[in-house]
Image 1 (cartoon, helix red, strand yellow):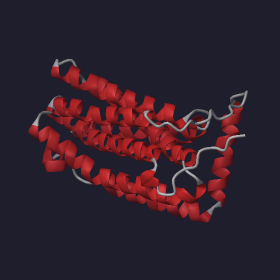
Image 2 (spheres, rainbow, N blue to C red):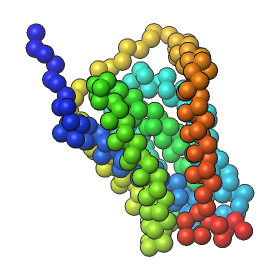
Image 3 (cartoon, rainbow, N blue to C red):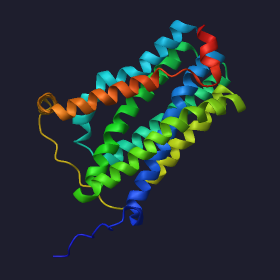
Image 4 (cartoon, helix red, strand yellow):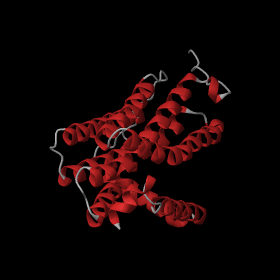
Length: 257
């Protein structure tokens, strides 16, 4: 029986890992830029006020609270590559549609809220799937280096992405900036689609209640692991501080004062 192909000892000599890393990095840049561009579309195109901006921010973040547990259990039943590609395609399509509608004068606040919510939903599934994809792609002894590389680019995207989104709006316009950020998702899906290593289809239980039992088991594990609770609380506090940062170039701040 032929042995399975071995994974190179160096991650950066592994073409599949490079493709995954490039896709994740591009997608994170597009996501972070989009989180700045959508509010600026509301301010500059729709003359949104403070309350409307708050609603837009809340709608965009709501999927994290509403769907994170469900997404974790659901992704376990699919190839992560399929989830990543579909999430990228959906976000590119949503940003492109919002840009076209804004340029044609047909974009209203309800439609923008729907776009923000849809992008938020797809981002939740993407974030869950990319973490699972590392576990399925790499050996156990490579996970630490793989996670370090991916989280390093993710942290860089959280810094560069908002600045990039603000710069695109300043140099072009808010609708064109939205269209310009969509190619990041296209680059991501094209890179991820080129991963050659075959990913097996996870076994799917026959009845849907199994998913809720899986979620309950995960919650019990979380409650019983003090170290995991500490990490999650620290991460939540950090994310909250990041999201409280003012809008780039003072555009949003001027609109809400």
